[in-house]
Image (cartoon, rainbow, N blue to C red):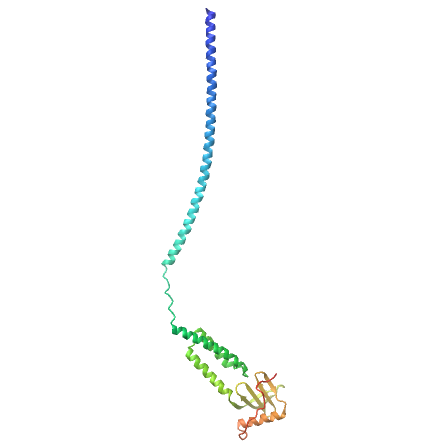
Length: 251
């Protein structure tokens, strides 16, 4: 009876042990499965977190770019507003046709004066005083400081005076320094505005023109010049004046 009881208890304990081992195995397997799922979930969460951080950084950068762009637009709009708020200068006064014609006339007159100034170089003194006045007149016309009507009157008066001078022959006493440095007294004969002839009391003669001064070496020519000087200065009876010289003096 006792033996039968022991065998029965052993059988019960074996069955119980067998059932406990299976439960433990299943529990372990369940735990492993749960751990794997937790790991997969944690890995998935980490990936999502990394993606979220990357997206957050990108959004922050985009917001900063938008803030800078908006700042530039704000500054640009502020500058435009400042420009618009400033009082605008009045529009330029339209130039009247008469003013334009006056300006064109002044420019044309200045060009003519400039061209005429070059002709003064043919005179013995290069027309220094007249050249200075004409150059100032031309500049004043272009700058608008000279009245064109007054300027053309002055210019024509100067031209008329120069033309009259060019048609006159007159004698005047004077001196001249010869090539040796000796001062010779005599008479200057002005032939127009481009030629001067000198007759010295010592019988010498010279011709001064745009090309320079040339001594007259021919005694016959010197004598003819001396006689002409006497006629022009009133020291001899009126008569024909002979000046056997050329207007262009060779150096």
